Image: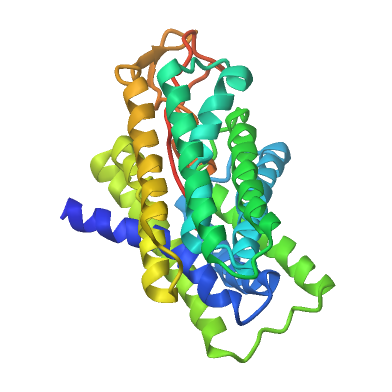
Length: 343
């Protein structure tokens, strides 16, 4: 059963990039994203207010906490997805976009030292270098095979990746323990407002009558969002954080193969080699962190489990260790976590 759940999770999470490709030819990026987030924000908003348990998760959160979550959502959802969808609309393959996005945990790990005071080993730096090399190899192969794609289009996914990194550190600085339903709702509402405003400014409020557009919207809302997030939680409860983190790094190769089969995107020996470097980078960074996980004692004397390393916005919002102390007395070793956000 765990194997089947893992396969379903990788497929559902990777489907976000495929859904973006499906909708890229039928409507502008902001129109597709607006109609993705409007129903999502409505469903989450109703769910957040429908039960006493859901309403209780909002108690104790002040305007500053909600404003910070809105900022995290602006970076991790609005900014990130806008760049991912726009890059695919420009002609960058879904696999290349997924791989560039997949370097986010490695980059966050490299920045964790100077920004969070987290120890980063030489082995982990080596892993980061391998990850960057893998991205360079795949991007070069994609650019060589694609016709009519501007060179600067390949810089767009990097902006999305950096937006995720910024969201990660913004969320890590929060003192509030924000529940997953709250963070997801605030992020979805923020993105719905942002993309509706952008669509209105660009004259793209009216959805096209094209069936492919609505297929993409349904695909993204059901399979990518609810399917991906739902399976994330289920596997998290059954198998733990490490298993989920490991599965995240399968997203880029799965997306690359899926894109090649479904859309005829380039997938040759050079692409396979670059994806192999990316997976090797993950293994190297994990090896550099071996033995680095431990229970950390806070200043108040209470013990808490700290999942090592930088985290994606969804993990920092959902899995931040509970503690009355702002910092632990020992640095948390950096380890890659997360992977492509549900694009």
